[in-house]
Amino acid sequence: MMSKIYSLAELKEILATEKEAGAKVVFTNGCFDLLHVGHTRYLAEAKTNGDLLVVGLNSDTSVQALKGEKRPLISEQERAELLANLEVVDYITIFAEKTASKVIAKLQPNVYVKGGDYKIEELPEARVVNEYGGQIKLVSEIKGASTTKIVNKILKTYG
Image (cartoon, rainbow, N blue to C red; front, side, top):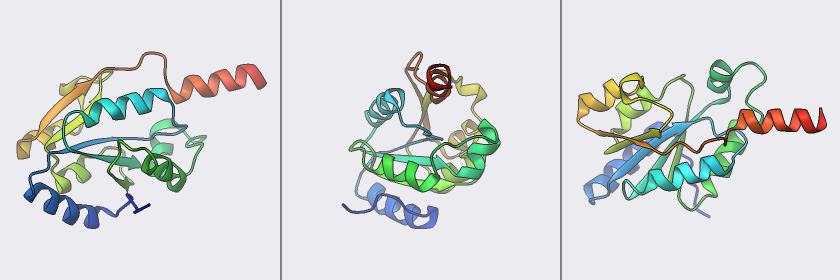
């Protein structure tokens, strides 16, 4: 399998070529720690907004900053590999910041997708997307599917 995991600089070049060829680029981001059905449904719905789906993956240090010192449960390299094995995902880049604003500013995807548990006006990345004229789409939230809930269920069952 060809690699789908690239540095931000490499991905910027690849996507510039893809966009020139007419591809509509969709970008989303997240921790994707303990991949579950909520993630896969979310990614599948995100992909319906364009031709190529790019996932910005929070690095281990940014997951820890966002979710606490006990996370992530799965290393960034393994999380990236899991995502790369999903047919719906075209490209992945790992980023260290708490938000994807820098990645989005560099890649300038046509569409930025986040889950329905967010409000567009509250997205830290919204300003950047609006500055270059991209679209923001919210996709349905998958109720009850979360890594935290899975961890809590494991602890309750086996803890």
